[in-house]
Length: 81
Image (tube, rainbow, N blue to C red; front, side, top):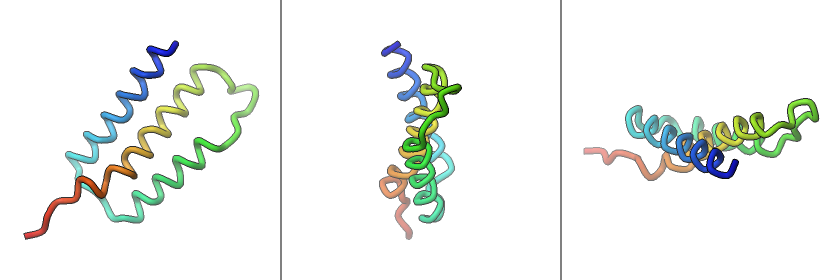
């Protein structure tokens, strides 16, 4: 199970970086909104019916995607000429 977690979260982070690299950073408020959404998703209690390893993996990968996309944006700003 640990291998699936590492692979899934790594793919999620890499996908976020690729989207950010090819589309470029958006306005600052989109990245702040993504960070707030990631924290809301990560801190929200999971209903007992959905508390399975697969749902935890999906929620975790969405969290990682949103948080990496939000946090990495300032580092990929293009210099203006």
